[in-house]
Image (tube, rainbow, N blue to C red; front, side, top):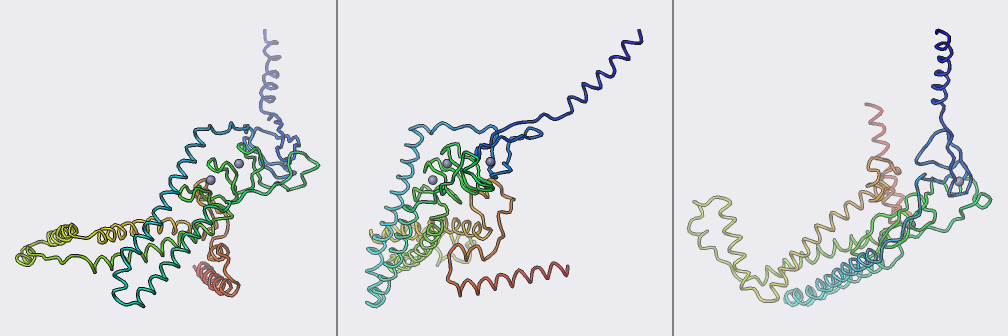
Length: 354
Ligand SMILES: [Zn+2]
Ligand SMILES: [Zn+2]
Ligand SMILES: [Zn+2]
């Protein structure tokens, strides 16, 4: 009775040791076509020859439905049309409402502001057209698919776009609205009807800067012109019982009296009030977007990369990223870089002392 028990024990030990040995997994690199063997299963692996990254479950995606593509195209065209009409309204409405008042001051004042308006309008519209029409940055064609064609490290950190069925460079993303991969894609902007990527990012930021400057100028001019033509306002309640009124009641009295007097404004006055509010609102929104863009450029990052890995370091942050982005002339960039490096040296020396 004891002998069978002695025979079963070694068998159990053998079974346990067999299950603990990892199985080899085989996969094919999409970049060079070589078969790769791994000690264990991994959902993502990198080829040791070409450097391409493969996901084990990647399959070709179905193209987007006709309705999806149509909806995106209609949405982009709607936003582009609204933005162009708004820009034309601000320029034409502003000139019609403001310039009779400015020319009343003096002819020189009127001609000077006409020239400023023309420069800002041309700059804003030109940068908008360039950001909208320029290709955002398609990846360059690379050889891929079979070992003799693809050299060592030719596809370093490339992934495979399952929409385009083509290699996708690092930091590139596929845009389903533009139906292409975009190098250094920041985001798809429906207001320009285009992606913001490596090729048009600079002109897009210049457009944002010109919008902020133009809207600040428009807000200043319309507020000044509104003040000049506003009907005279009396505050009878405020004059008689000012001492007995609280701070908030005084403000409420001022606001309601001024708002009531707006009913006596001419058509020109109403356009001025609308333009002042619209310029201030657009300025606030675009100002926030511009600050966000400049902070990502300072960090050497893009909006999409920030979303996908918010805490990852994508490069060295610093002023040199902004200088390189705008392509400043050599003497200016050298002075600014020296200033930036001096700041860094001071920071480092401070940290060593601590
Ligand atoms: Zn490979
Ligand atoms: Zn793609
Ligand atoms: Zn796009």
